[in-house]
Image (cartoon, rainbow over all chains, first blue to last red; front, top):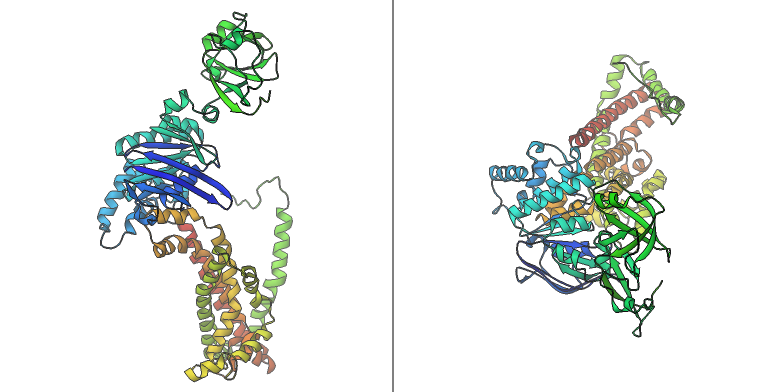
Length: 358
Length: 278
């Protein structure tokens, strides 16, 4: 079922949580709503579910307006961050709940309900735990039960509110891959709310980056990661070094070529900010081009698949973080205090309003 | 397996506090209660049986325990509604209503009894409208029920309120997204969560009602075999210097109350174990 969010605005008191948000999801897509806490992503999800009403705007599911439709008529499955399982019911009873509350005429027979529950529990790999109570399960198991419970009513739309937020890192990683495989099997249009950029990049077909109640960028994980549309998206998706003013790439821009210092602010009152990802910075032990930044090694973290190095710039107190492959690090033989020369392989320049703060 | 009473702990005080608790409990509860039993033993079995099974005593048990039980049931329902309204909704005067709930605790029971009698008597504010309908409240067993309901209210409200406050709204929302209507959500999700607290509140209201004296004697009319409660019967015996007879009735009340309290505890233990067992 396709989803259309049409100019939705929501306020709590004087605080605008969502400001004129529009969004479209194709049938069968898995979309991640990504943003920091308080950006309005959960509110948007709750509006889609019918748990909140928008102040303005419309929600269309499969082309039909549901803004005023009751929550029970929308056929959406909702998975909560803290599971919200019924703790006095067993796993089986929890999953069967959605079927057992159907009106008499539509309710399947107890045998059919049991069969359906068994199927769903097999799907979420919880068949062996069918008779347990929620507090006898681990967090990851509880969330799988919650997912099975949401799927029992055969929703046309699955909404997941930070489903793995309360789990530890390893389980989170496993579960999001599992969720992705499950989605590829079931093809239910799904919206995943998360503040974890890795989760969004790994699980979603498309990512919607939200910030302070508006959409910063919408695109595939590759698009938003490789071509962030705004400084916010750049900073939110992965680590980044921020340089005020323009720094040179391999091909020097005309500013550097003329040997002029970066402009503090141009006539329009804007200044330029350069964003470089740590793995897009290249280090060398001697100066090869005049525009390279000189910096000293502050410390080195060698644990992990790549080596992370923190540098301190010679000209300003700015900290620069660099990621190198192990081979490159061994070639350079860097020690704490060594002087290195930095130049970016890839960078992105944004114009920011207001004068430079450096 | 050796019995380990004391586990080594960085927080000292187990021995001291357990000792004090036992001492205090003995002083305040056990010694007076055993005195009750000791005094009763001055009666022979025949005398004891005669005292506790005479028709007047049996009628008083029926009224005391019956009215207390009914009162607890009524409070179980209305007390939950009051708690629900106080927790879930914001309305002007809410904190005043919240404070008023404790009034039956704070009010001297005699004052409560006189007030209720004045209101429900045949020319009182409410009584005058009930009388033409054939409902006599004051000086009847119904009056006993009214008084016992009045004094039991805070127990249910005050035990249910915190549980309702802590009830996770998400669970209700989950039920709603799964298609449950309001009644199904209430029955399948909210009631099971409230049940243990509700039971505790009702048990406390019941226990309090069984021992209630002050507020009841004014409104009951105290007619033997009809509207006489057991505590009054005990008082009557005391006034006739029949101390052993009074304690015999006391023992009966004590044993019945204890058995009921134990049963409620067992039900609670069973219902909480059902979904917390490891």
